[in-house]
Length: 246
Image 1: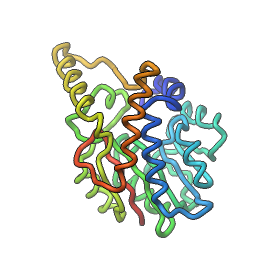
Image 2: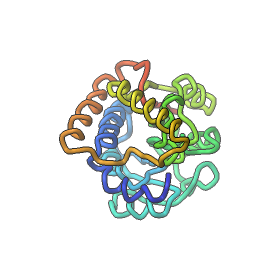
Image 3: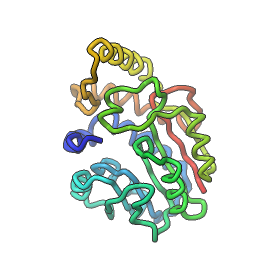
Image 4: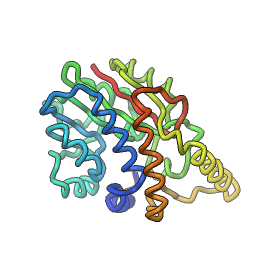
């Protein structure tokens, strides 16, 4: 991700509908995972720490990111033991074992996704769990993906195969952000056509805060998906979510 975006992320991620809605969905998924009472949890690619208040409720929290400026924002929350690192080769927690590893929109940034997932698997205790989200569908690629340094977007069949190849047993895998999918797909198509006409990208991103009313409306709609996810497998959406174990 462009380093200039971290201050923007830190400013909006506690209230922006996308981050808040994703947290609500992830929390619902975590409630379905049989974690021990004092779980040892690792968040990889923690960014500026927006997930910390949620994750810290489930146990002792450790976190890692590649960017020092992101870690400085995360450290201000005082809710996790932090370290700088980069998967797969720079993993500062190799001596520890975890009950849960969380990767929210991280895997798509990595050059060697398989090697990274094998490191994650080796860090989990027996029956330890992985909660993973990634952006979906390559044809939804936009300037947001470019400015966030994404390498890829995934189809469900690709993510399932990748996780299984890396030794994970999948408990649940589904698309999500499906209620807003038609609007977002239409917006991406418009952005693609605009970029084609102009002949260049515009460095756009999705970290701007909408008005309070629009933000509340989008949050209510997006977060309502948590009542369907876990019970149903959604056939299409802007993102994918998976729960797997070793």
